[in-house]
Amino acid sequence: MHSKLINRVALAGFLGAATLLAQDAPLANSSVSIDLPKDSPVAFMGMTTGSSRTSARGAALVLDLNLSLTLRNISANRIHGVTLRVVSQEVAMGGVGSVFQPGLDVGPGEVFPVHIATKLMRPAQMAGGPLLQVNLDGVLFQDLSFYGQDKLHSRRIMTASEMEAQRDRSALKRLLAQGGNPALRDAVLKILARREALPEIQGRIVRGHTVTNAALAAIAPERPEQFALLQFPDGPIQLLRGSALIAGSEARTPSIEVANLTDKPVKYVELGWVLTDINGRAYMAGSLPSTDPTFSLPARGTTKVSQQNSLEFSTGGKPLSIRKVTGFVNQVEFADGKVWVPTRQNMESNPLLLQVMEPSVEEERLANLYVTKGLPALVDELKKY
Amino acid sequence: MSKHPNQATLALHAGGDLGPFRRWLTARHLAHCTACREEVAGYNEMRELLPELAELPEISWNRMAAEIKANIRLGLEAGECVRTAETPLRRPASMAGWRAAVAFASVIVLVGGCMVLERPVPVRAAETSVRSTGDGIQVQAGDDRMLGLMNGGAQKVVYTLDAQGSMGARYIDPETGSVTINTVYAQ
Image 1 (spheres, rainbow over the protein chains, first blue to last red):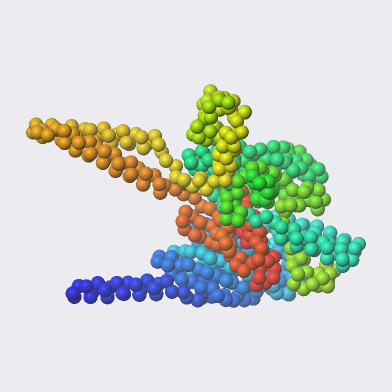
Image 2: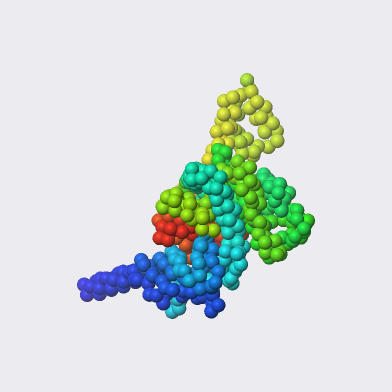
């Protein structure tokens, strides 16, 4: 009888301790470290942690962070983009992300918000230091000059985004000048319709090869699929040939051979790829970047862009049965740092791209301005620069 | 019209798994038999529509067969040992049944063990992956969830996969009203 009582008390104590361990706790400000270099063009003004919570789950800490940062432009230039690097357990694996805020137009002395929502787990015994570090990876200015560590290639990414923004902003300004408000409204409505009609695709990337099993091989045997190639006649890169291994909803080891048509060496090529399923529906699947450190494409030379990872695609919660893969050149960076992106004519002359390409960041930003503040606000915005 | 091939033959034909002669015979039959062509088309559609069967575990049939054979030998040898240690049998018929039962039970246990051991073996090797979730993108190492960047509350999110090993999510942040692009990297 006595031992039963002791057992019950012990059990109750254990359950109580487990409950306490699992309880949520608000996030202390010291849990997040914001590190900006001394010569940074932006200054950290403050942070609210809102509904951020930490909770212990056994030997791990679960963090649900909802951070609102306020930054100030302390440079003499207008800022058009900022990328923050978000790091958890940098010494361990798998804890790096970035938050890129494109489409900014922040003048000297002005402040702007950056919102970071993140979830992560880390061992409780590492809880001595900050749980999350936020660093500045890069700042892009209106004149395309750049500041930052660029660990995540944010210079190229932000420059390409800014060039697309300038391209699409100019097109809308031309429409406004030629056709007035009705023409601008029509263009924005088309952007909204295109965005709404965009087929949704989700996915999963697995590092390295997957182990294709016997059942998969029997049902959807892996097959080499040649890329259909979309060429831009005035582009700097020509696609020669390419293939990927396809099995059901999985594509792996994509590889495309490219030729440099210019007299300038190229240091980076990014290929977009479009998947068509067995019902003939096309999806913008993603990109094939030439991030191999040994990548080199001399003037008038040829080389291969390839990756060893496996990508799985799904739509509406169901695996996407891949029937066809189409590749096109999405971005080129020359050795001198200049970046090329497709022209509007390149995009508009290809019905497949019109069907699958999301509106650019600038188109999306301006269309959202139209939706939230109306046409006069959009016209005022276009007149700013 | 010639005799229809059976279902198994049509299924194997759909999967390209028949030998050259039977493939030729079946193709010859299909050339003028609409019903069988439809059967084959059905198998082909099933192959396209059931990619989730890819998640079935790989079964090492050769290994399993070898282990079954080894166990049968073990059972027989065990039976031999029992027989030599025993005094002459008064009821040989019932003892023979007992030895067979031991051997049979051993085989059953081994086959069951093989299947149990084979089943939980992950289809994929231990891996780091990045996936889109309902409200963000998450990097995982095996079953451990590492860093995730969330876009909770955003109405339309466009995900992009980078074959290098990262995934991006683009959306209009409901809190700031700004276009935001989150990227998570599998390292």
